[in-house]
Amino acid sequence: MLESGALVLSDRGICCIDEFDKMGDDTRVILHEAMEQQTVSVAKAGIICTLNARTAILAAANPVHSKYDQKLSVVDNIRLPPTLLSRFDLIYLILDKQSEISDRRLANHIVSLYSTEKVGEEKEARCNLIATKDHIDKNFLAKYISYARKHVNPIIPESLTMMLINEYQKMRCMGNNKKTITATPRQLDSMIRLAEALARMSLKAEVTAANVEESVRLIKDALQQSATDPKTGEIDMGIINSGVSATSTEQVKRVCDFIRKVKTDFSSQVSLNGIKYHNLFDYLNDKITKGELEGQTEQVTETDFRRALMQLEEDGEVNLIGHKKAPTLRFIGDH
Image (tube, rainbow, N blue to C red; front, top):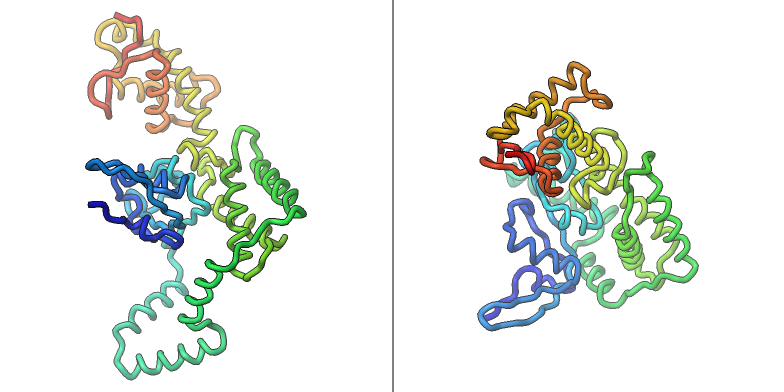
């Protein structure tokens, strides 16, 4: 029997996912297809079919160690695959910063949930008064959204095509370093989707210049939070798309060169049992501290060191033997 899951049931709607970082690999594979093709393919128990999943996804995730580390990128903090993370139009960080005003507002709200009936009635009356002045009635809002989804399909006029292209080119040039990527074609797709959504909210038949400007502002604000390299402070889309910033990529290349240079210093170990992981790591940082490695002043992090070893292994220069967390390094061709 084939039953619809959350994504298929959310067709032409929105699917809200909590604890996004806790999902299994099988679920992530389905999300890749749903977010890219808007479909879900099923091949199980002799049933082969493709179901529509034309849904928007709103997801919430927590940092790996329950607290966001400002020194690390979003990918390192959340540990989600870049291939999945890069499919979201907007990524915002909601950090729990200490603030007397916001803390008091939150505390007042929580306490009011457990207040006496009399206080609750006063609160409800106050909310009804505010609703008539500043807020939209919940039932009316639901009908408004339903009507906009069903009847409003805004188009992008020819006069705005050059504006979209120019805004995309500006986003490509936001970084100060030519090696960093500040926008990809996915940001252009996001810009178009957000501009259409903003026009639909206003029940407009055509996208306006103001809609495009607002979509660009939303994307830039999201990138400023989620795609900023913690080392340089520059926007680098490589963090979202590949999980590695341009700065880290350059550092990994340098570490690879350093490992090749110090190979001769471990000639006796290379010829016998190979180089121990921690021995090489400590030796590199000791050389950097003494200023004996040209072009390197900062200590090598364990993350960049691991990436360098993996890069050397992919290039066929070394073999990593033993425990994954602390392997033994053996150069190819050594005996």
